[in-house]
Length: 225
Image 1: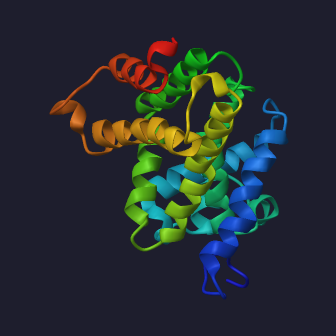
Image 2: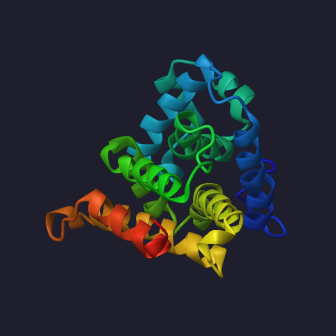
Image 3: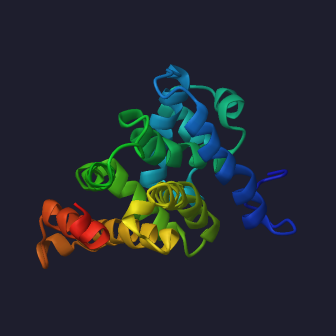
């Protein structure tokens, strides 16, 4: 495929991530979250089915078109190629769902903000589509590390950057390293989902979500709450 972002250029991963990953987050933060794109959503629903069943490498645009009930040209008019279609799926199941529920998720008192973020993130544990997609990214990362990097840059870095900035605007919290603290908080949530759902730890070392959330908030805020 000509000019495929994931193919070997001078540095395909960095070029693509810098071009698409950062711009995706900026686009999502500025776009009205309630906007409706029925044809686009139809394609994404079909693509999700195919990606989860076939994996990234074996997914073809022909199969996506058939499953979604659209022409292949319609897919290309919306997404250009398979890589950008996958980017749109990352948007759909992660950042967009978060912003749709909380248009200003990082506004409010610290305890409220941290609890809101944690509860929303851990609610994904009950979303089987998200868990299946999370497993797909992990499974494909050995052959397509750019996909995992893209997921990290758009989803994880989105949270790190915004939470770090939030901590920086609240000097009363006396957090000396806002970036590291943001990583500790969000990294603990990611690790919890990974351990409980992807590695099936919920059957061998279960823990209630609320217990983790309250302990995390106490670790970050301590006696300040």
